[in-house]
Amino acid sequence: MYVQDYEVDKPTTHKGYDLNKLTAKELFDKFGLEKGTIDFIGHALALYDSDFYLSQPALELVDRCKLYGESLARYGKSPYLYPLYGLGELPQAFARLAAGTNNQNLVSRLTAVQFMVAPIC
Image 1 (cartoon, helix red, strand yellow):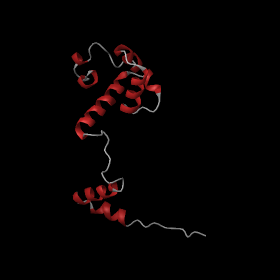
Image 2: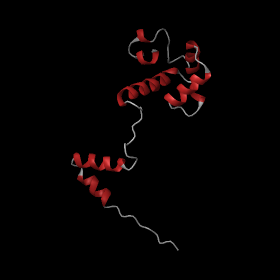
Image 3: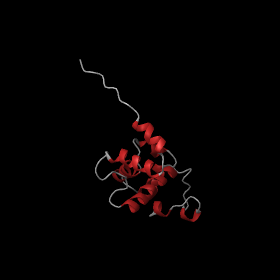
Image 4: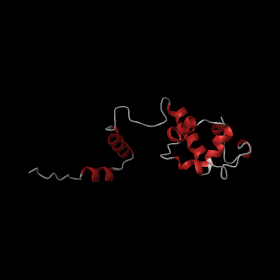
């Protein structure tokens, strides 16, 4: 609930913690979280690839976790956007967007690219 209610511009939501000075490790300790929970929050929710974030100010961690929660609430089952029928939809979505915005110059440049295939010896 702390992360969900936290707003940078409203000091009443900070609950006495200065996240610019408090490290992520210290914030976790104040809430009494176990190591497995800390690893899950840092790596699965905040998407950190190492434990270096634990020694950094907690503000970025809180922002990342808040973004994860907002995305999950907005998109349903997963906070990550993934095409319904695989990654082949990404170029199609780009082409539709370009066509919908009358960006024919960009589309014509992309379709004019010719790929050279070297013969296999």
